[in-house]
Image 1: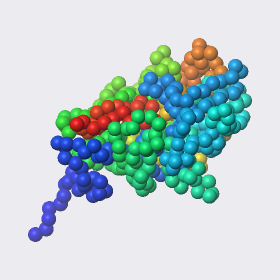
Image 2 (image 1 turned 90 degrees about the horizontal axis):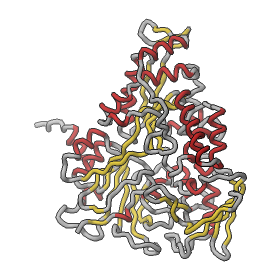
Image 3 (image 1 turned 180 degrees about the vertical axis):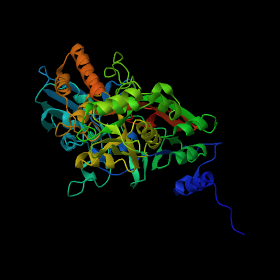
Amino acid sequence: MPMPPRSPRRRRLLGAAALAPWLATAPGRATVAPDRTLRVIGPWELSSLDPLRNGYLFSRMQVTETLVDYDAAGRPAPGLARQWTVSADQLLWTFTLRPGARFHDGAPVRAADVAAALERARHAAGVLGVAPIAAIAAADTPAETIRIRLTRPFAPLPALLSHSSTQVLAPSAFGPDGTVRTIVGSGPYRIVELEPPQRFAVAAFDGWQGARPAIARASYLSVGRAEMRALMAEGGQADLAYGLDPGSVVRLAQRASVRLHAVTLPRTTVLKLNAAHPLLADVRVRQAMSLALDRAGIATAILRDRSLAAAQLFPPALPGWHDPALPPLPTDPVRARALLAAAGWRPGPDGTLRRGDDRFALTLRSFPDRPELPVIATAIQEQLRQVGIAVRVAVGNSSEIPLGHRDGSLEMALMSRNYGVVPDAFGTVAQDLGGPAGDGGDWGPMHWRAPDVTDALAALPAASEADAAALRRTVAGTLQRDLPLIPVVWYRQTLAASPQLRGVSIDPFERTYRLTQMEWNR
């Protein structure tokens, strides 16, 4: 007789079991072998080995290092550089490398290797491109040092040198043509298996100068579906599961098989608009679209937390940039319709707005790497429909957003941006609001410029703290008024961890998974 159709849940469970051989060998919960592999899963793929494009996964798994690190409080700390100084005129920074540091192939970490990595990182795709660097020089006497000369004072330089795009790879990591062929870093873990775009595995590096990690082996697997990640964590097929959807978080909170950890991140989900598009160039239209959004409803219904409704672009987790005095973005569909009418738009026969021969219809691109994004996109589609704007939601790859930005085809995008990817948010903000042509970076505003923002960003690196606070308020206020990016919700990262692990915590800057701080329960 024919077999009954499998339920969606059963299909997902069967799919999880078939993902890879390592999933089928989950050890029992009674004992933990000391050499057990810690299995990390998340939604992010290894789309490239190049640090400029996808290096963050190797930084998070502590395979690679940057010149500067940051501690849990967001203060600069030694990385490959054990110390640094800056000249009295603030134009020459000298970084002294950690003595005895070695790459995973056994070669010593030389100043020349670090200088080469930093020169590569000065590309527009990396945050170091916003620094006013005149020259980078390496010296090997009396110690291995890096000297960075600036054209003007730039206090955020150490923060930029902590970004994953500046991670230092061994010369053996590169092919004859200069492209990255493999990952040879200097961190506490070394690569033992590399299977892009889905998986890689690491083992403790015997040549690491610090304390030997209690976790001897670990692996990372990209798992596309949020529901699958939750099921794998619940079923003991993953020890750390990132990128959980809100519904799964509620369910997993009732399970003894996992422990949930959560922290609010300096990340905002935004509606990115092409300000040069004929339908979006008028600031009144962008303001109307913002007024149409029910942020509190989205935060409550989708994220299960009303407090995550974004009142402004920069969240409270970003002190210095978040302005508590800024009036919060309101929801007012009636006023939204009035602004659209003032911009010349009138309802058509089907309810969609028209202006002459133009119909107000746009495509909203998003991606499922953050599981809540497609659901939020659908909610925005309905809320904009209620004020006469027709939206087609297209869910694809995250890479389509920067590509659409560059070729001009992007109309709208729903995306999530971490403004604390370096602890001093200036680097990310300057990269997003400037871009190579001054009209916005790949993940920032598109074809939008504001002289007061440009002037504020130019003045910030050398400003006193009092002046810097005023300049940051100028940036936040102008963004709130012009809305080239429409804030939707702020973000809380939730991690499902095995109860067999101790020392689990979340880095609010998303720089590291903190594997070296963990150990197995005995």
